[in-house]
Amino acid sequence: MRAGEVGRALLWLALLAGLLLPWLSVAPNRLLPGVDTSGFLSIGWAAAVALPGLALAVPQRVPAWAGALAALAGVVLLLAATGWAAAASLEGLAPAARAGLGGGFWLGLVAGAALVAARGAALPGVGRAALAATALIALWLLWQAGTFEALSLVVEYRAREAAVQAALLRHLALAGAALALALLLAVPLAWAGFRRPGAAGPVGATLGAVQVVPAIALFAALIPLLAGLLALWPALRGLGLGAIGPAPAVLATAGYLALPLWRSVLGGLTAADPAAVAAARAMGMTEGGITREVRLPLALPVFAGGLRVAVVQAIGLVTLGGLVGAGGLGALVFEGLSQFATDLMLLGALPIMALALAADALIRVLEHRLGGSA
Image (cartoon, rainbow, N blue to C red; front, side):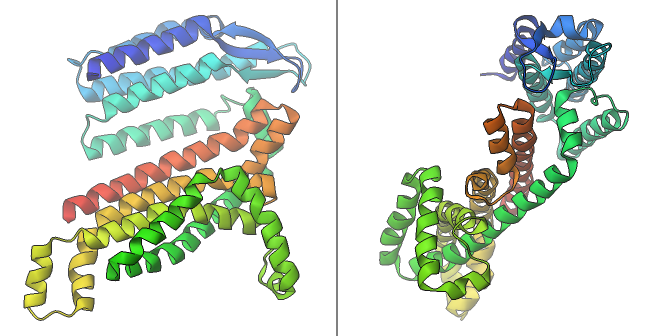
């Protein structure tokens, strides 16, 4: 599909979101269903101003920088107008009343953001960085101005601000611990597979078998296994291990991360040009020197690709730690599910998505730079 066709599809998606789907939902309290209003009825004049900005980003004859900025301005205006409309809809209502975000808002936001990204992708690296910085500054200014304070999602966040921040740090700690444990497992196994190619098959099959097990089943199965292990060796409790809590979450997540890390390390070690290896050996370099000076530098882009997959998986998978008492953002998601509280679920889910996207983008940049310097 060509870029112009993608842009038109995204624009139509934003239009349909505003025409057919609820944009805001005003409810008497946190739990009761609300009255829905469509996007154009909710935000009024702002739609008539924002939509031309989004439309300006579609024609490919418009310079990429102009199209990206026009789309970004349209998205920012839609966000601001949504906050203003939420505040206006709550005037005269009881303090418990909530103005929630509907499916039309989320669909329109995704379509608009995708349109910004599509036009921004044609910019050079400096231009993309400037576009991202402009978007972040605009959002920060809207947040500081209190534009979103009437939205029920922000009201929920204000009520749990400390808990959300603690859950975010806990989530990062769990993901980091699982990634470190997976690296400790995958790197030696990959080195052994490189030195003894016959061992790579059984190792790969074993690590691949873990991927077949459903994540929830693996998290749950580790609880009785760890309980039995601790009953045999109670001294392990002194190391902080427990049948519930971080231990099963970290171990299960590390088990899933080991395969992509093992594949990338092994693939990187075997990806070196045989001619470069032969030349280094002819110069009298030892195997250790060849590995340090030839294999590892050439393997770094492959390593970075596997690391990107593993980091994104880690951020997503430790969400299930909320089911086994590990805490983190997953605990907020499952608490919201148990209470049928959509905003509470979003307080956990949105940061997880943001972390995964940010990690993917940052490591992808590193991957490209390593690939260019290899």
